[in-house]
Amino acid sequence: MSTNYGSKRVVVGAHYGLRDWLVQRATACLMALFTVIIVIECLTPGEMSYAKWAGIFAPQWMKVLTFVMIASILWHAWVGVRDVLMDYVKQMAARLVLQVAAIAWLVGCAGWALQVLWRI
Image (tube, rainbow, N blue to C red):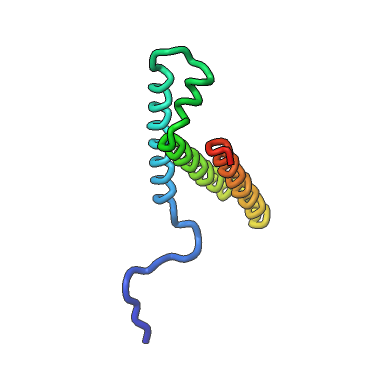
């Protein structure tokens, strides 16, 4: 006789719709907040020049905030792309190839963002 303690957890199949919905909303809120911060920075008095633009992103906290923003965009994009692929690409092998390509592209974008922000 088997005794099951705790809640049952589904380990196969999709079953993560609520989590993905919450991720999409949370990352969208982060993107909106970052956009407001950048718009406020750009509307401050003074000529808009390369020096001002570079000055906005010079502090370490702004670089970290920008990378968090980029990570949010990448996560937001991954959830969206994965959902579209799961809905419209029925052949498992093709979907897997496209998902791996999307992950590789998103990781490349993250690396590029690191390089741009910190000049690695």
